[in-house]
Image 1 (cartoon, helix red, strand yellow):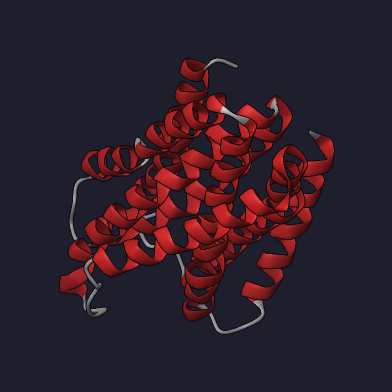
Image 2 (cartoon, helix red, strand yellow):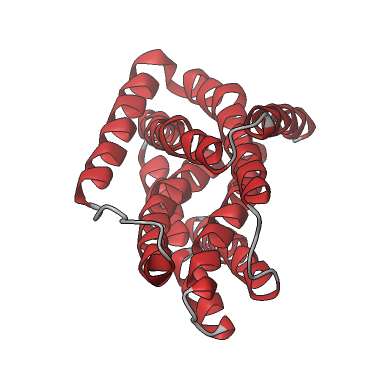
Length: 241
């Protein structure tokens, strides 16, 4: 695929993924904590599985261990810096719902950039890897869009405005896809490096944010079951593509 097609694919995946989450929230205004916990855990398990069984092995095959692991370290550092510059969310009171939703949307928009990077770099490695990555990120974006939209709806924002903001948060995926594809077109080493960066970002977000968030929402076995479902689904996707 050429860079334009990859960029449009990343844009489509980000916009549709978060937009569908926002659309569901328009009709399902008060999702239960157990539902959100399961959705986030499954999407996190999917990401972890695709990174470990598809993205990183492909990067190792392209340019060896060094550049891929260097990218992972860079990716982790990037997300740690993002965490420092993002404002901290406050409270859990009803009056904070709107603020919480907007802050969540800003965080999702920032996180969608490395997800797009993963799509772009994966397509430059091979079309099958790119399609698998695009699919799993689209599935991952759905609960993110829902997690952003639910507090906005609870805060009194109109349904169409909620949908608009969730779609807006998916646009950086297209930007990231362009950057990943452009870097990958230059040399195989940059493909491996950019795939490693994307993997590091996704591993940190999954283990440091998504799994703890899912567990905080519901303390039962839902998170563990959801993670296992996601990992198994990711393995099946990897083998089918």
